[in-house]
Length: 77
Image: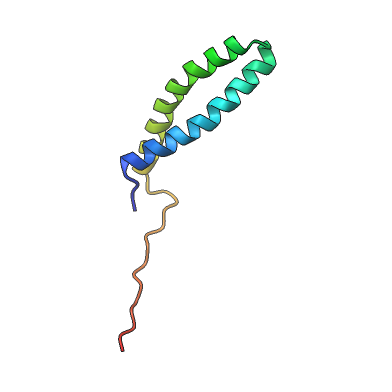
């Protein structure tokens, strides 16, 4: 079973939203400046979406750890 590219993209975006919030919070805690924290978060959101998407697509080509679905038998009356 393979994921569609659109699914990989949506997973990448949702994960980046979570990660970017984390980056902004950490950046603020270190710098104590909202402007710097938002700037850092803005830059990293785009670079990490692209990196995650490439990572996800590469793993989609690897069969390691995947289990093929088994056929389900049906009972007829």
